[in-house]
Image (cartoon, rainbow over all chains, first blue to last red; front, side):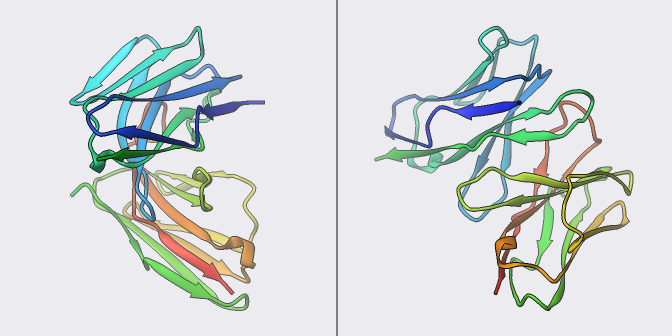
Length: 113
Length: 114
């Protein structure tokens, strides 16, 4: 069955360091992978989308990589700030033309001043 | 306007009540979604509307009844809910329903069923 795994439920990191979050998937062949940020009691906010033929995508302090051989995406936040503390969700298209996003459980990132 | 607006923000209802959740977007998006999210879990898809027609119903119990009166509005009618239905209900929209479409979410309705 299809599975999305985000490496850890929680990640603590010192301010100024680079946070790296992992998203692994099995039994998917996604053409796209998306990352969202969710704050408590709020809806997810879209951050980045990466296509299967792209190795890397950047937006300001954010970087996403996509390795379809390893079936893995890495999400990096450089020069992390306390305001980056949130839950980060990866999401995949369920495939087979269904066009519905399935979300991973998320990683709760805490940036410690 | 890049917002999806959901009302109410909070709702407490008894198991015999009937209530409705509302969602509105003015971005001209043609696909709208209802997701359910329990604490510390990912959002789970309930319904998808594309061009005001229901295109996906993820085996949701009939006590949840969606409605799309026009391309900007999405409702979720609730009737005879159970306490386990307590969750954050999220509405989202996207330009179209297709691969690679990013979703715009509302802030959600936090529902408590007593």
